[in-house]
Amino acid sequence: LSLHEISQSIFVHSFWLTHVQYFQKLSWREQTYLKTKISQLYPQMIAVVTDSQPPSKRDVFFGTYPLVIAKAIYLALSYLYPGNTSLFKGQFQRVLFHSIFRLLTSVDICASTVDFLRQSLYLDQDINVRVNKEAESRTK
Image (cartoon, rainbow, N blue to C red; front, side):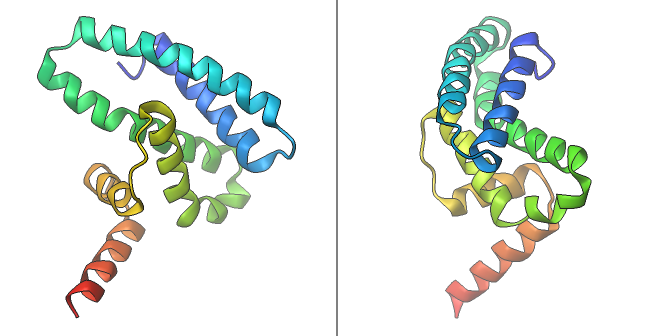
């Protein structure tokens, strides 16, 4: 489903939204346009998934799809701007995952939930270290 034409359009529009939102000043008009396009595309994607997948797979898809899109944006930024890869790690990744999740689901989840979901999907070492440190500090 990630290779579906609608999904690819969501990725492209989300990539450019991220780009203009974080790296282009005075881009309100572009951001509004891109958010409108994404808000038109995502219900179409929901319909495709609903028509083609059983309920158990839909739950998994909708829980992970925003994070997959966010990871794809992160990887695209890292690939297109290899000299700035260090800028896209850590807090930027956390903000990116949170903003894409909120954009697609309209759910404003907390940062620790973003980290938990990222950790469960991707075995990123920086997430594991931070989550383990936070857990240790709570037990002390």
